[in-house]
Length: 383
Image (cartoon, one colour):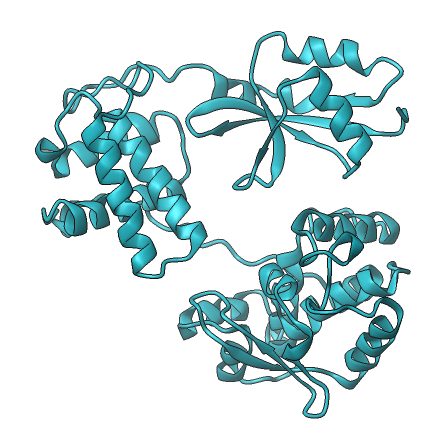
């Protein structure tokens, strides 16, 4: 085993259980090495390997790491992270719920209705991710009220769940929204019991500005990549404003070189859209095509099997950041945000940017006006 391999630990909650995420560079030999010594599991939702949390885990991995790999367990020491592993303090009881106890097991009735709910979501053509998110959120809610018949659950119970489980455990507002959406759908469509929407407590949305790179930083990232395939992937995300999944699901037939267009099929919201392809990127794609000769997917996985892997794409960006020495927590979505902002700064109408990005509402696109330097730089400073 190479001592240069780095393993980073970070605590997390997964399916209501305490786990530890394992972050390391993709390496089959190292993965098999870990599987021999720890109970390694892969999580699709967290997009990483993880192990169940135990008090002795860090010390066990530390002993295992000697002359084998570098272990980074700094996040396991942070005070605000450690608190996530400490049971939440008791709060005032709004109903019969007991937030200081573990969640109960689902009854046969609950399991059957959970399955019906899943079938209903699938029949309505909800995306696989949405089906998984809603069923997981509903499962947590029903396990919390395992002591109570489903027919007896009402609005007050949902409010109590928000206060006694979500808030007391400091879970995210997005999770709270997911629970509200899932529970509302479940009772309306499966239980035929209308909950009062005005009584459903939804969290206020945080107005977070998108992260944007300068044009110079984008150039440094793209030029840091020597591999033509890697450079083509990141260049397409930036130059066409693509989401990660949109890039990885592109097929060769989606590239219209004569019209210099890309057809993005069944993107978010199951919508197709067309984006323009610059001549410079088209030449890059031709060089890439001659070198790799993909068969079906525009960017194929290792050995030409299936589409390119999401984790591998994230590693491509990570390598580019290291080479370009950009010390920011850049993600692939930053490139999409940067593309939209740079279009706006160049004078492109917001309506066109909305169409290019595939936003359903103009208000979603308008957020880029808050990070664009257009106009702000021309304000006369009183100082």
